[in-house]
Image 1: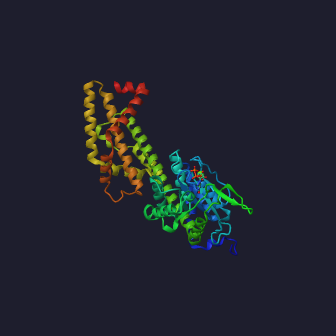
Image 2: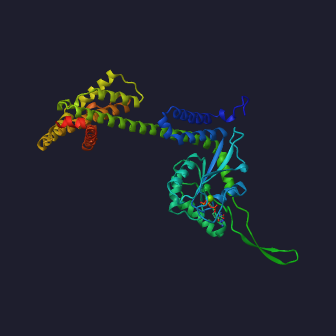
Length: 452
Ligand SMILES: Nc1nc2c(ncn2[C@@H]2O[C@H](COP(=O)(O)OP(=O)(O)OP(=O)(O)O)[C@@H](O)[C@H]2O)c(=O)[nH]1
Ligand SMILES: [Mg+2]
C-alpha cells in the first residue's frame, strides 16, 4: 500500500484505465431503463464480479479439455491437495468452480492481497450441450490464462475448441497429461507432433508442457537389508513441476498486464453488448408502437370511411405515433415538429405510395361491389390501406430517429422508397384487415352501420 492507503497498483496507468473502463460500463448499465436492465441482468452481475476481480488482483486460470483428460486431477496436483473431485467416470465435473491456489507463489505487483484461482470446468464434449458451452465461454472470457488439457494427440473437437479459445487473445498453455501411460519415446513423439503439426499456429512450443497429474499406481520392488524382496503397488507423486514453472514464468512476465488488459477488454465487450441490447429493445418497442398505431388508424378509417385520396392524409394518429416513437429514442418532439416530420415523409412517399394504394383499394372495392357487400368490403381495404400508410410513416420516422434525427445522408424519398420495397405489403395489409374484421365482429352496431 502507498502512504494514502491505496493499493500501489492504482499508480499504474493501465490498471487505472482498466478500472475506469469497467466502472464506465457499469455506469452505462445503471443508466439503462428497467426493461433493459432486466435483459442485462447477467452482464451487471459479471461486470461487478470483474470489478471485484480487478480490485482484489485475482488472477484466474481456467482449465479446459475433453472429459476425463484429468482437468480436476491437474488442479489437485497444482494445489497440492485433493480439492477437486476426480473420477474414472467421464463427465464428473458438472459445474464451473473456483479453487484458490494459495501456494502458487505469485502476487500481482502492487496488490499485496492478490490471489491466483484455478477454474475447473466440465469436459468440453460433455453432453448437456449449449448451457455448458455458454458456461465455458464465460469462464474463458473472465480468465487471464488458459490451460487446455489433453491426454493424447488432439482430436477434431479438441482442436476446434483450442482454436476458438485462441481467438480470445489470452496466453494458452497446452498440457499433455497422463504421460506416465507413455514410454519416453512415445512421449517425445507426441510432443513433437503437437508442437510441429497440430498447434504450431496457436500455441508457442514453450507453452506445450507434459505432466502426470494423477499417475497410475506402479509396482515397486522393495529390497530389505537382509536381501529379501517384496513387491508393492504405489502411486507415484504427481509430476506437474514443469507446468508450475511455466505458469509462474508467464505470470511473472505479464500477470498484471493480463489482469488489466483482460478487464478492459471485458468491459469493452460488455459495453458493446449493452448497446446491442438497447438497440434491440428500442427496435422491438418501436415496431410494436408502429403496428398498434397502424391498426388504430386502419380501424378508425374503416369505421368512418373516407375518400381514397385521404389514405395518405397525415392525421392526429400519425402525429401521436411519431411523438411516441421519438420518446422511445429518448427524444422530446413537439406536436408541431412531429406534424412537419409526418408531412415531409408523406411528401417523400408521394405518388409512389398513393399509386399503390389507389390500385389496391379500387380493385378491392370493385371486387366488393360485385360480391354485393359493397360498403363493408370497401371499408375493410380502405381502412387497411390507411393503416398501411401509417405503417410506412412510422417506419420512416423510426429510421429518422435511429439515425440521430436525420435521413442518414440520404434523400427522404430514397429512404421511403426502400421501406416500400422492403415491406411485405400484402402481409401487412392482411394483418390490418384482420384487425378491422375482428373489431367489426366484436361491435355488432358498427357492423350494422357498415353493412347498411
Ligand atoms: N494414468 C493417469 N491417469 C490420470 C492422470 N490424471 C488423471 N488421470 C485419471 O483420469 C481420470 C479422469 O480424471 P479427472 O481429473 O476426473 O478428469 P476430468 O478431466 O476432470 O474429467 P471430467 O470432470 O469428467 O470432465 C481419473 O480416473 C484420473 O485418475 C494421469 O496423469 N495419469
Ligand atoms: Mg473434472
